[in-house]
Length: 411
Ligand SMILES: C[S@@+](CC[C@H](N)C(=O)[O-])C[C@H]1O[C@@H](n2cnc3c(N)ncnc32)[C@H](O)[C@@H]1O
Image (cartoon, rainbow, N blue to C red; front, side):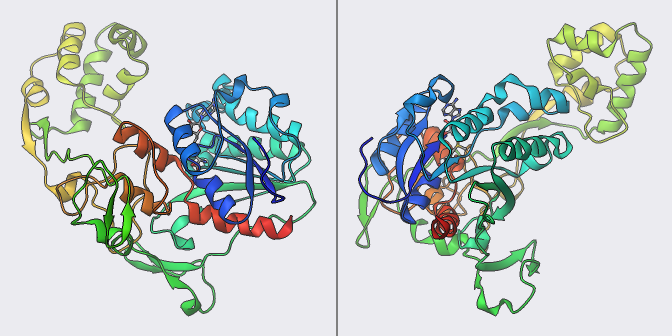
């Protein structure tokens, strides 16, 4: 990658479509090296931001990454931690390499600052020990570390999205986190918790309606088009808005069924472990026999008949458990409608919510707007799935921009 200017430099790991990087570029940084192993993400990145290396970070040697950047950015994925039933297992899990990769690059490249982003769930993994271990490993590199859980809505993004940001620096400075600029309502109550003093100087949260209603009645289409003098790209949407599902015909109480199965299992010589092995599951059978909390589950019809062969129970619940019919579900119950008058629910990497107009899901463009990507940012990818994944994975550009501005002042 050739250097364009004397701007402070970024090395970007796990860059995705580049939401975080774009915010930093807008604040005056320049990306000198970026990497992701998802091909569509790298196509999007190239089209909108610049060069990016396609490949697994684990297979890229430090000597192939430029030295002494001002900042290393990375939203490392945390699958390695997500099986965190056992703390040791999660901390030592080999899939955890990704977080170690970020540590490796920071150790070898010695940026002045680094910013890592992750989901809120990382705070509670292993009862908080995973997070402690991460912070410990970062500080062992000689960095002053601070972290905060930020809600993008409080920074003017039209979306409620809470993410953990870890900032570290080796300049011995206090790490800067942006101050909230917007306030609003949480569950119908005015949320002033962040604002001890006069909140009138803050702006109101930006609602979904304010952000995307201008596209509500605009026909979706594959090609870019001009709408009220503005180019609209990626206004494509899935029209799968089914409102039927297969459900049990009769009401059946989960606790009663679990009690019942537990009783019949205790009369048999089948251990829960053997039952799991018989069905080829890991830990599912445990849920069928559980009654003392709400995590029990009722077997599906195939498993019910399979269990009956093993445990030889009577026919008390056969009909109730195994009779299924197609049911209508009401739109409101089944499919989260965007919080139209509030910041939207979190835009995830999976299928987006159904638009309040009921005819389609949110379009790729609408999701991109709710993530504060600029209108001229174009997503590449042959499927909705791929584009929605890139968008849902991203750090909202405007939030990244505000974080970047604080750091830029100190560099
Ligand atoms: C949460 S996303 C990052 C989003 C990005 N920070 C943004 O703001 O747009 C994580 C990214 O890590 C990438 N990734 C996961 N494992 C990787 C690996 N081993 N090597 C390179 N990239 C990887 C994924 O393809 C995904 O794009």
